[in-house]
Length: 433
Image (cartoon, rainbow, N blue to C red; front, side, top):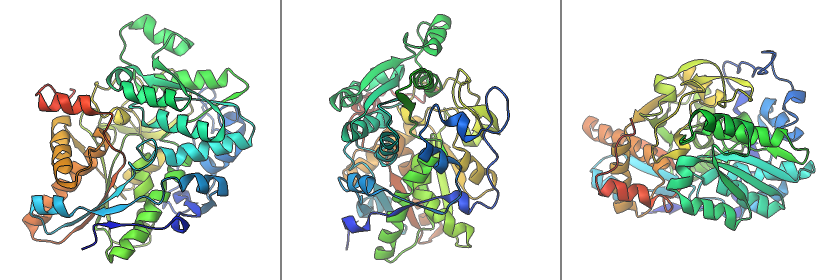
């Protein structure tokens, strides 16, 4: 009985997989916020280095991973794949449940996969400083670590509700040399405008993005880094799914279902896209994106062009959205509190290549506790959405008497989310409606 399946450092993928080469229907172009015309490389140049712009719009199927980035990945990659035997026993299910565990990275989540790549490409272009936003703090801490690794300065605008809920994520950002402020802040025009209307604003990712974009656009030495949503971010994350495919081969199985939580789309895309390539080529597979019921972008949003931020500074993206002015409730899964969805994930959902589910916060935490008590790992609230979906699907397999193979991405640990678990155990955790 093999509980965990490990790969060697030589098995770290040598290329990122670009699903833009294989989409049945191409993405609609991003539009300039002023002219409403398709965005060109020159429009993105103030925010991103040219190599990332090429990755954002390119359709080359496999993109080489630079040696310096692969070397940095070797700090924690390849990540383990676990067979969840104890959870299977607790559920008394015939399903085989596997999970890819990204919480072994120094920052504790999958976000470091793209942070290291983005910082490397910025450094190669001579950029000295990066500005970004963060929700729950996984992305902000990952970028701070990556900047420390490659010698860049880092400024993080952290959504205020998470800034207050997760003080140790703030400490991690500072520990790795980053500067962090609560968003909305008084440091940008976008932040001041929000505070003028609502001095007690709890913030949102849309607001924090506006602040970070304004910061980057206003300084010659600074570029902007985004932890999800954009094509190049999902591209970098595909190392998760590539490794998982090798590990499932070692296990002698292929998943019937691939599951991950979804906020902007990066960890879901990371594990699912290499498998969705197989589905496009005819393989039978269900891919399920799981979101909070209080921020139901795919399940309740509409597909249209929308801004990625509140102030309307970003390009207009073709995506499922709840509206760029949507203010999500203060749920503890801060990384999933985003009004829009990655254009790639949106396109896959529109074309019915993936499914979406939405769950209430209290049910998510119930599944998280069961997972911690069986498998031992304390999951991040975001990742626990995938756990709940896996549990639901495993129970369905039991009811149907079918042996399903379920793979989900455990995108990060919950060591800095214990206040949320405290609220759950004391009966104070609602559903954030």
